[in-house]
Length: 310
Image (cartoon, rainbow, N blue to C red):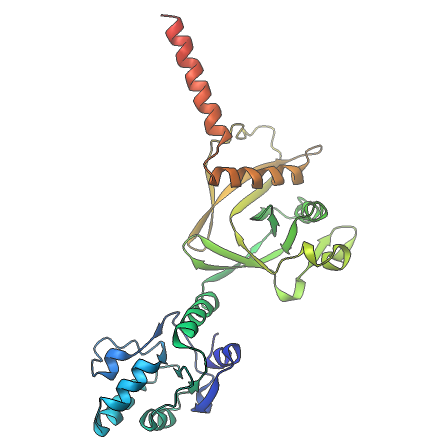
């Protein structure tokens, strides 16, 4: 759960009053500048949001309102759902807001940051901290700049493949358990649980620390997941995609990412296949598709044969 104290610690905010309320939860990723509310319009007051006061809000509150209006509107701003107030630009909060926050046990905070700067970084922080999250059994690596999530049943060799990819110069993000946050539609960020960060479990060898063995350049704290490679044991009676025209996806939370099904059997160099899959994914994002090009050639060849036979 995200609380006001987390925001205070992250942005080094000064507490003016309301210290007893710093453990209040923050539930909204949005922040508000309550200009309309200061002017007296409370019909759509977003009271569950962090409230920011910049020079405009503070000056209007101090100069355009009567004493009675300042006291009344300060009380209306302070609700049970309001997590905190933050005054930016080293502004001094009006005494009416200090008193209202004190009475309602709402943290009143202050920073030297500009309001534009704080809004940008605070919104980004809240989006990530409050994003929907889940855990997936698999391995996450950065392969040629592409976040590749390798999944498959236990014992198929995901960690061994990850080790080979790391030896080839790619970077490990997480092994066995991947923590995933959805910070936007089809935008998934994966990282490792702190307990197993930088570690790989190799059956018959045990736990190894890849950063200690290969250096800091082979690990990454987090990565956007762009491609899923799902491994399964080769089934002789199953027809696998040979052209690359099948469009598979994997659903994680409310997002979809492209997925490739790779059958595993002795003699196949799966790590090389994953490297090629990542490179091909990059090319497809640039509009280059070998499968589509082959299909177009095949259609053109068939048409030329048909025309020649007439």
